[in-house]
Length: 395
Image (cartoon, rainbow, N blue to C red):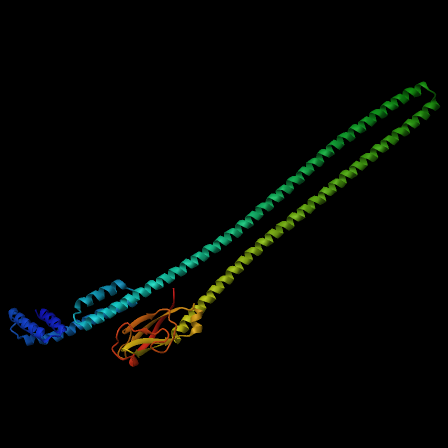
């Protein structure tokens, strides 16, 4: 019943009307009498402030828990804490605090989504580069395999040609040998026939004449044998010269094939070395660029300066400056997250926001990219401390 009286008083006081409060006062007194507690309405109202203080502490506890959960990126925990605090908030100040914490959680959620998107985009780019490199390596291996296959085909064709040449020479040699044997047998037959005729003539003629004819016939036979031997020698020398020429040709072809294989292998190794060097240089450039961007981001976070200005219309705006040279190193477009705190605030409490595509050359209310503070702080702009909490590149 006391809790019910507290809710009734809180709602009535939030209306701010004396007449309504009087009605609420009488309603609360009647409820107190009907409860049988024996106390007066003033005794119950003495507990109102205590209950309201307890609710405020509960709200602060839930809101602090929501912010800690959001910092740990446990958004289901943060949402549950915001919901519990919203159920206890009845005054406009309490609701404003709940709304500020809810906005803080939403901003943390949006920041997480942006980081996840950047990480996914970087992963996709790395995957695309890996696939391109694999495709380049696959094409290089395919070209090397094709060159090796063509080289093997050329070597097989040269071996087949040499084999056919050897078979042709063997056949020619066989025919020459057969012809030589035939000519020798024919010469021997003619010689035997002539000797037989000479023997018969010797028997029918005088000894002197027979001897003379036999000597002349023998001389002719010796001359014929000498002629055949000379021809055979010339054919043998010709075959030997042809065999030497074919052997030189085979050796020259083998040397050409060896040199061609060495050239193909050297070209393949040079291509692989060049591809390896290009990949290493590309990776080194990417690492250097990434390190340079990270260093520039750290310097941007430490060197960027923000401040609050009271502008016409009692409007508070955020102005500041960033290093243009550092900003150009990270792509020329940056989003700066900030936290504005009054002197009595610390930790993560305060007003946070993001200055998107921040140019960083503003020093006055209407110059550059001065941004209006999303909510009113609890202190003046001169006492407001604006801190840079994060710097990210624009997507």
